[in-house]
Each structure stands twice: as structure tokens, then as C-alpha cells.
Image 1 (tube, rainbow, N blue to C red):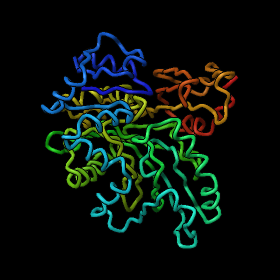
Image 2 (image 1 turned 90 degrees about the vertical axis):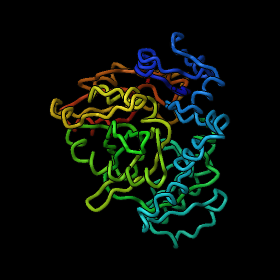
Image 3 (image 1 turned 30 degrees about the vertical axis):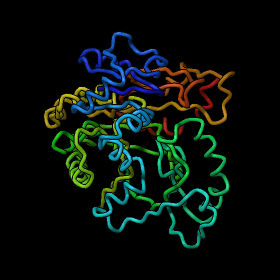
Image 4 (image 1 turned 60 degrees about the vertical axis):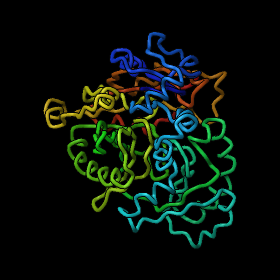
Length: 381
């Protein structure tokens, strides 16, 4: 069963639900988003009954967590979600696996009182309940700590207008040691026995040390082949501690020569904004169908038949401070940076923090490097 909500539902997801007959909870978002009226819509009472009888749930957006919290209190699902959304609770959960990892939860009103002399830099400061890169600060030294403290309240006001409290809650923050290494994101579900099934592995490149944006993620045969077994082993340990079953999630990690450490788990969904659809373009995997039908990718044969290209998605964010009412994106100019687009999804930049999502392939990492350095202001007129 799908619980669909703002900000975005892809046509690919809707087509999957229609083709496979997966039911969809009818709510205000399904109407405001203008979803296909032919979908198998069900009401609240029907949805609750189905879930209590063991129906699986997939949410395209963490906005749907509000509905789960309000309607499924007599199930274990809200507590599993909280294990993931509450970053301090998640760190405590995996402390047996990573006993030496430093983290500390701090109420917002106490941050200004912290003596930076007692902190170990570099570190990361982020909302205890958060989404994407909103409110995430990479802090390298004492001066940067003070600058962050001076601007954090202004930033928080912006987050409040974008997401509900269940998605981004800035009443408390978590300080944790900066995890060295390359960053990855993985779409995985835990099946009815608690075994993890990996559907996507993305590498998350950055333009520099201070970059925390989500502009580009990419995958390839080399990435899947190098990290599938390593990540699955970590997920088996996490699943054992959390007792996840029939549970889809999007897990972010950092990996270096010595260790693989999870950054966070995003529950009940795969990559947000339907970016998990990249598996369809790269591997001919429908992640929604695989989850609901308990299917496992035959990675050995999939990788044998695929080329050596890099497959990536691009989140085209609005420039900071742009006047959305008077400025519009220049798509023709922007697309000159993408040699082989596979699908272009244009969004209403007046309603969203993005003006579009693209799926593409390339045989050169230099294309991705160039995209990371783009100034989005150049593509608005």
C-alpha cells in the first residue's frame, strides 16, 4: 500500500501502482498533487485495516509520517520510525556496533552556552530530526563554530516554513564527530525475515569540504560490485539491533579504508523526490515492485549485462534568494551541461525549492564534476 504525499510523486511511481494494482491511501495530497484518478484509492479505515492485517507500506515522502503517527499507534511502526528519525536514538541503537563513535544531543537553547574549547573539530551539527541537508553544518574550527551559532536561529525560521516537525524538528541538535571518507546512499528494504535487500547504491560527490548539498548522486557497475557485500553486512547488523521487518529505508553512509559508518536512516521510503527511480534507468529495477513483491535483484547477472557508464540523478535547486515570482529557469541553457539526459522532470520552481530533476548517463566523471560547480543563478532569467 502506498501513502503518497507532497512534495512530489513521479509518473513512474503512479504507473507502477496502476499496473500492479497496489492500493493508494486517498488523502488531501493525492488530490492537490493531481494524481491519476484511476489509481486504486482506499479510505483511512480500509488502510488501517489492511496494515493491521500485515499489508506493507511505502511512503514517497516523510510528510506521510504524520498520518502513521496518528493512525497506527497500536502498531510497532511509529517506534521503528522514531529509531531512524531521532538521530540520537539511532546513534544509541548502533552504539554496540560503533562503541567509539562520539555524539551528543544538545537542546537548541543550550547551543550558545557550549564552550568550543571543549569540542573536537572537525564536527557536524545537525537537527536531531532532519531531512536532506537542511540544517546540516560542517564545522572545521572554533571560529566557524561561533559563526554557525550566530546564524542558526535565522536558518531555523526558514526550515519551519518548508517541512512539518515530524520531518525537520530543530528543538534539539546533535553534535557528532565528522565521519571521514566517501559518502554513499543506499535504497534497501528489510524483508519479512529481517534480511536486507539492496536495490540502489549511489555515491554522493561534493564540490568541496564545506559542500553539504544533494545536487548529484551516481551509480555504476564498479560501485555496486565494490560495495554491495560490504554494505549488506552492515545492514544485517543494524537490522538485528532494530528488528526491522517489511521495512523500506534510505541509508546514508561514509566509507574509508578502515571503516563503514552509517550517517542516518530515512524510514519508510527510498531516495526522496522519487529519485530512487534511477534504478529503473540504470539496472531495469522497479524498486516499488521489488519491495512489495519481495523480489531480490540478481546483481551478478545484472552487472554482467550492463555497460561501464555512470548513471546519475541531478537535483536542480533554486538559487538562494531568488525572486520566484519574477525569475524563471532557462532550461535550454541548463541542459547544455548534460550530454545524455534519460528523463527530465520539470517542477514548478514557485512551489518547490527545486526547478527540476534529471536522470542521465555519462562515460566521463568530468561531466558530474562540472555539474557540482554550476552556479544555478546563471540559469535563471
